[in-house]
Length: 154
Length: 100
Image 1 (cartoon, rainbow over the protein chains, first blue to last red):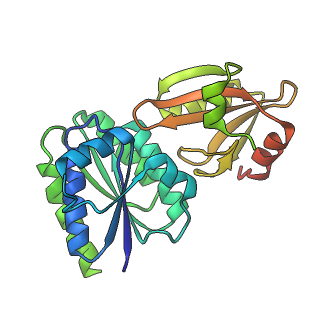
Image 2: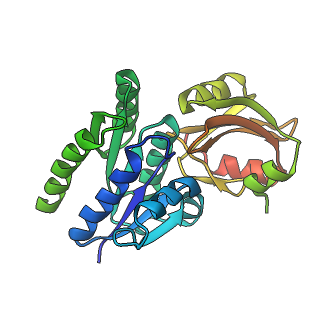
Image 3: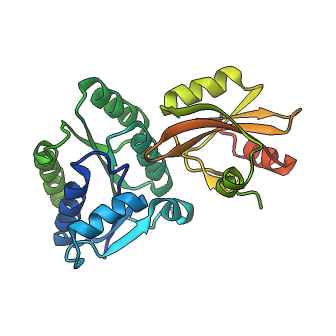
């Protein structure tokens, strides 16, 4: 079974938790064994959102994950890149895993959104799914659905 | 073995030059202020930690004082530039990872 890692950033953005549950659901349907790497606070939000673990089966602390991560551990990386630190984490995980990667880039400020996209585009071959979004996860979800459909067809 | 996270928790012998900044600003600071700079890959392990950043990641070295200056990123706090004293072998380890 192919393994996917979903990399979460700071849970400050309200769209991250619902999108994380959604991505997990979609990837599981596509046959991936999904693990979510997050900070303890982002993990608490996931646990409250999915109390019986219907969607989220595997979770790992982001620092423990980073410490033990090796190339080949996962065949797909999907990372939330909605803050400067999240972009740095995504790029770092991308280089360690060296595998198919999708960056979910969103921010309410257009300049920040452009800057994050530019950094990822200039430094990785990751697919970028981007939208100006903050509270409403729909714009990024719609673009993500397209990217996942493309992934299934490849 | 030296461990950065434990060191920062338990020692007061370090300097935070920049705090809650963006990675680019931290990289520029290190390039401008460090006595010498070595560039390493993103995710490379030095001082017992994987270094987060956009490659090539600059690490400042001051051989005379026995310190290194590095970007230190946490998901909710952005990136800081921290300067810490390290054993000589840690400086040698940084140099061995040089990509630029």
